Length: 351
Ligand SMILES: Nc1ncnc2c1ncn2[C@@H]1O[C@H](COP(=O)(O)OP(=O)(O)O)[C@@H](O)[C@H]1O
Ligand SMILES: [Mg+2]
Image (cartoon, rainbow, N blue to C red; front, side, top):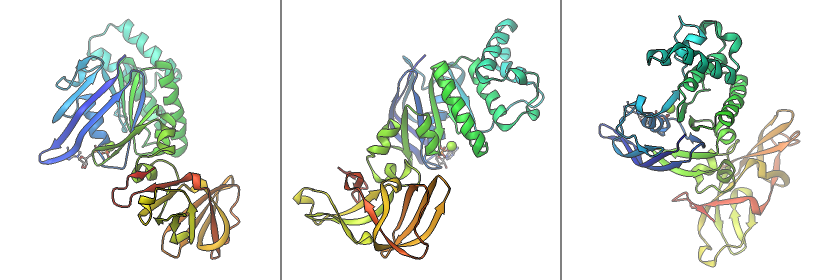
């Protein structure tokens, strides 16, 4: 097995540059997730690792080999796509073994590899079926099985769960986590779903417009984001952002009609900031600074949607039921230790 190294990787389509010099080390056996909004370059980067897209600049290594100019088949990778691309006229068994058969593997070896993949993915009872007789989740398991039988050093997944309904997505997410534990291979997994990223990853790579914004373990990104983009992208519902000013007493937030106590260097006094507060870190409290727009009671958890007089939206998440009356006014209870600050211009974190 092998890790993956990206060194100053660049991708251009004609004059348009979509990947801007990405440096990344994925360790052997690591589960690495590329996450970011649609169009940020996740698929492009993954396809460059696979060899399905040419690399315009920089280099890509797998294990100790420079694979930048190698064909996909020579790279020791297997890719699983959002669309399953199974052969409709073949059974599950034939679909999984087809690649090996085309490469001239002996039948006994193909059978053994298919049996092993089928055991791992719990597909034994479906081996004789054709794809049309399978659910979406089962079809995606077959396409993962097709990757497993090839025994790749690196698995590449491009939004493999996006075509599944919510319940199946959760189920398959657990399956993929289990698969990684059992096989222990290096995996790179692309998703725009931050919950998938948080639950699956050893390491998350947050991408935006072809640039890495931050790399880290899921909880490190949640607890210690480097910038406003990562802070807003990781965590659901998203972090609330409000305009404020640093004063000697703390951070004055006009929208909340309060000063949140925090000692900051005198040189920073008077400086405008963006205040970041996670919905789960604030609570409905005394006061009348905010208007209650909407309450959503989901049973176990409640979201209260608020609006400041300065036109800024704030969401509060709580366990249980929200008692806030729509149309009334309330205040916010804030833990100053759980407040994030960002520079309004650069959007970088102020620590
Ligand atoms: N074949 C192509 N020709 C030109 N531009 C492309 C091509 N493929 C992707 N792009 C552009 O590259 C950027 C990144 O795309 P992609 O990697 O598919 O994003 P993601 O997977 O993060 O949604 C987008 O702006 C997209 O329009
Ligand atoms: Mg994509």
